[in-house]
Structures are given as C-alpha cells and as structure tokens.
Amino acid sequence: MPTNEQRRAAAKRKLERQMVYRQQRAKKRRIIAVVSTVVVVALVGGGVWWLATHDFGNGDASASETPQNESVDKAENIPTALHQIPKRPQALPEKVNCEYTKGQEPAAKENTPPANGEQPATGTVAVTLGTSIGDLKLNLDRSLAPCTVNNFVNLAKQKYFDNTTCHRLTVKGIQVLQCGDPGGDGRGGPGYSFKDETYPELTYGRGVLAMANSGPNTNGSQFFIVYGDTQLKPDYTVFGTVDEESLKKIDEVAKTGTISTTPGQGDGKPKTPVDIKSATVAN
Image (tube, rainbow, N blue to C red; front, side, top):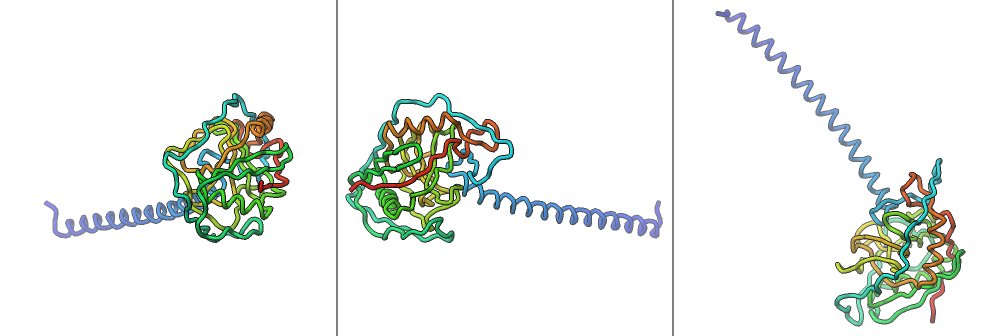
C-alpha cells in the first residue's frame, strides 16, 4: 500500500500532467482561432471580390486581368431559335413607384440618377447600341420592369454607355455578353442601385435582355444579352429583348471566343472587342 508521501507525489505528478495537457489544449485553441480568423477574413474578402466580378454566380474572369497563359474558348452549338418573349403572369399596376438609392461606391462615370417616384408600367422603348460590330437593337419593355427601363433610358440619354466596352463574354454553361461598366472590368456602376423586378416564372434564353447584379437589389448599369442557352435562377431582372439580326452579330463574336484565365472555363474578355460607341433612344 502506498504511503501518504507516495500518494502526494503521485497526485502532484497527475496535476502537473493535467496542467501541461491544459496548456497544450489552450495553445491549440489559440492556433485554431488565429487560423480560423485568417480563413474567415480571406473568405469574406474573396466573397466580396467574387460578388463584384461574378454577376451570375456561374464564374467570371475579370476583364482587367490579362492571363499569363491565355486560353481562347469558343462558343459551340449556339441555338438559333429565339426564347419565348417574357411576359409577367400577372400584370403590374399602370404605374409603380421607383427608388434609386445612392451607394457607397463612387460612380464609374459621372451621371445624374433618375428621380424617385412613379413610372408607367406600359409601353416599349427602342434603343440602338452603335457598336464596333454593328448596331444592336434593343426593345425595352416597361410591363416587365418599369424601374429598370426608366434607369436604362436615363443613363443612355446621358451618354453613360457611350465609349464603353462589353467586358465579359461567356461561351460555356451560360452564353451571354455583358456590358454597361464604363471601367471595363466588371466592377463599376453608376453610384446608385435599385431593387430587382423579378418574379418566379422568369426564364432566360436567346434574345433576352437582363440586368447583371452582385446580389439581391444591387442593380445599377451593367446588363447582359443572352445569345444562347442560359440556365439561371430567376434572380436577374429581365427588361426587354434583342432582335435576331443583332444576335447574329454577337454569335460571330462568340465563335471567335473569349479569353479565359483557366483553359476550358469559357468566361472572360471577348477576343473580338465589342465597344459601344453610342446608345440612342428612339423618340
């Protein structure tokens, strides 16, 4: 049987082992906490960058970055049939209230935001984009998205889109041409935003004109033209259509390819530039 002195020595050794174990656990927790913080900061920072440059949630290569090893991916199997013209399942009131909220980021190009207030929810507006590949004819539909149409017309009349470039072309997964950032890198906007005008029944396909965004209710100036197959959630405001002749011009651009940062990605700056020289609103 151990003596009292032996029991005290054993207890002391046990206590010392427990203290060392606790110190080791505390050290591990501190290391894990530091690593976790770094990871979270990296993820948050990466997430902000991703939202700013990945407008569709399906991948995006920033046009401002020239890849060291360029990969040109070309569009294949572009459909020729136009998507059914979008129509709301339930019509909007004759007028809707529109609000344009100033953002924290400065405008990529000087402009005056549209006035807040009621806008008509009926009628169409024809807009012609004079581009380096020829005229692209848009038909904006107020019955789909009156606040968006009002915004686009307002920017066009201020020459906001003049002398800008379409910074993004996707040829795989989704087939769209994205424009509307005067900075040409996919990060710029007009310095304000407005709410989505979406509905669950929205679908996207050849000929659809829609707003790009970086999350719910972050519409600004960037928009995209769908020239082919595009499966997206109904998170992007559709505000009009593009005519067939214009789509054929975009097809040719898509066939020459997009410059991707990763081979096979099919998402980046169009190899054939699409520069918008003017945006003219029909009277």
